[in-house]
Structure formats: C-alpha cells, structure tokens
Length: 445
Image (cartoon, rainbow, N blue to C red; front, side):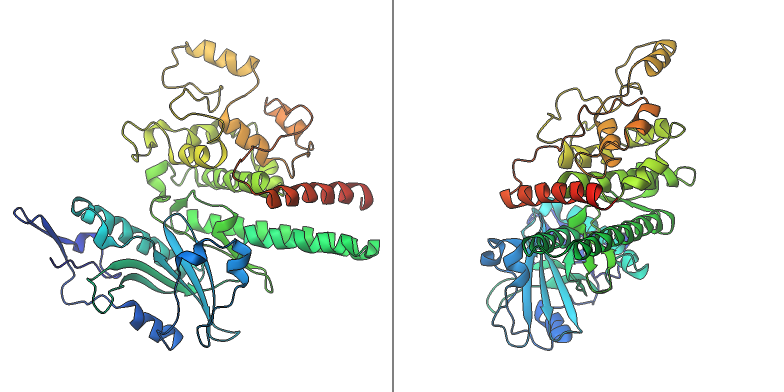
C-alpha cells in the first residue's frame, strides 16, 4: 500500500482521493512532489542529522529540567517540551541561531484509513494558518511547515506534520515562574527597599509591555488575517527575555477558525477582540495570579456592550461540531475545558448569562426584560468577565464597575478556580505573588 500526502503548497482542492473497494486503500496524490525525510530537513537547518530528537525520557522531566538539560549530541544544545498532540525540540548551533522542531506525536500513516482524507485536510488547514501567521509576524518566523517522512532504514514510510521555526527562549508561563523565583531570591537576600522598588517597577513595566503586545497581536489576527484563535494562554505565548519580544504559537485549525464561522464580521471585530482578551485574562488570573489585562477589560466591557459580548460568546448559530448534537460555541467549549471542567458537568444545564434567553427559555419577552432589570447577572460567562477585571486574587478595585454592569461582586474578593492538577510549587509561587502584591500596595504607594 502506497500512501502519499499533500506538500504544504498544495491546497485542499488539490487533494485527489483514489479508493480501492477491494483492498480499502486510500491514496492521496501529490503528483511528482516527494515528501522530504526528516534527516534531510535536519541536515539543511542544523548541518547534521546525527542528533537526538524528542524521546520518552524527556517527556517525564519537569519543564525546568527540560528547559536546562544539555544533551551530548555534538554541537547542538537541546531542550524539549510536549503538548497534547505535538512535541517540540529546541536546537542551537550557536548563541545566535536557534531552531524549534515541532512534530506531531502520531504518524498519519497510523490513522484509520477512513479518516485519512479528514486528517490530511485538517493538517493542511493548520499549515495554511501557521504560514499566514508567520508571514504577518504574529508568530515566530517559520522556515518550514509541511509533512516529513520519519522512515527508518528497515521500516515503512511514516509521515508526520513538521514545523521548523525560530526558537524563542521560553513561554510566558515559564517566564512568570522565573520572575517569581527571582523576586523570592531578592527577598531572601534582604536587599534594601530601593532595590525592591526598582524590581517592582520593572515588573509592572514589563507587564504593561507584554499585555500591549499580546492585545496588538490578537487585533492583527482578527482584523488582518480574519482568523479567530481561542486556544490562547500563557504557554502558547513565547518571549525573548532580552528584547521582551512576544509572539503567539500553536495555530492549529482545531481552535483557529475563519472569523465568519464563529459569528465575527466587520461589525463586531472589536467585540471579538474583547472576548479573546477576556479568555487570556482568565488564564493569567487563574494560573499566575497576575492578570496583566485587567485594565483593558475594565475599560472595554461596558453597560453598552456587555449584552452584545454575551450574545456573541453564546451565539447558538455557530456551535461546534466536535461532538454529536453539540450545543456549545467554540468560546464555550474552550472555557469549559480550561476554567470550569472541575466545577460543571457538560451534560448538565449550564447558565452562561441569566440575562440572555436560553434555547429552552419560554418566558415572554417582557418578563425576560424585567428579569434583566431586577436580578444581578450570573452565569459562567459572567464569571469570566468578573475574573478578567481583577488584577489578582484579592483585588476588589473592579467592584464599582461590576455594580454598574449589575454583576454582584464576590464577597471578600474573588476566589481562584481550584485546579487539582496544579503542583504544590505552583501554589506556593501564587501565594508569594499575592504577598508581593500586598507589599507593593502598602509600601510603594
């Protein structure tokens, strides 16, 4: 059985499917364009193919071990990381040139034959999005995006999706972990208060710089590329700590859609930007206890647009088709996955915003409007808005805005959503972040 896959510069319409009803062979024709072997790509960019790639031992390391470990692979220094569907290896021939090799975990040759066409089409969609993001300088520069053959000397052809791009030093999740470590060290050394104030000032300046860059990247994504990616979070933002340059990664088609497919058009692109910032703010609030987007959210979510934001977030005309009879929009699905998985069963009735009518709501229009005026807004979407307005877990400065929006503030300050999988070290760092912020408010007014 011979199986060919489409090179990156082929479009979805160029796929030719040939089915053999007897042998159930699916062949995807690429013409006379060969798929490069992974060793050829490594020779081109690294000068040698005699290096180690991602392995199972690397997956068992902590992120800090993966970030700092040096492998005996000749001139290259390597660190590794893994996501749900991909694994990344960072190679560096010298201090100036670093490459990130990203490969899919599973080979397309191992996909059920019935799913070949769908798998390849989805991969090509991702490739096109990644290329557009690179060309628009929203992501690290991509040198290669396409299929590669991982065939061994005696084994069969095995194709994976491979992306080779400029490597950044770390993602924002790791960056803020290291920032917290440095502050802990400063406190242990009992440096004078002026040094501590300088550190806090730099910390706040960097927060503002990073948030402005991310908002600008999201704005360009929506307005220039007409794409909306909802899987935006600190691990999917990379940073160069020396230049503080920030880019977005993981532009996979599963969570990156054409704007029109999720309800965004020229009239509501500004609302889409606000929704994406709300999602990003909740990641920073929940996992880092350092919401660097709170000022943007407080300024841009108003009594005049909160109904429109909620309607776009919950628009049932643009539900996802991942599961049979799905009634969730892409915004809702990503929110349940990241923020409410431990709190709510998807099979249960979920209220996203009690001020908008649910699909089975039979109230008369006048009754619904009366409910809007009399009851405070509640629901999962409202929780996201409320958290996105808070800088940290004991911040109450947004309470007056919540009152204007008819959203009841948390009593005694907001509580972080519990995540049982968070390591003790992460909890410890979050507590220290809270301590740092308390000291900042009282000592450096």
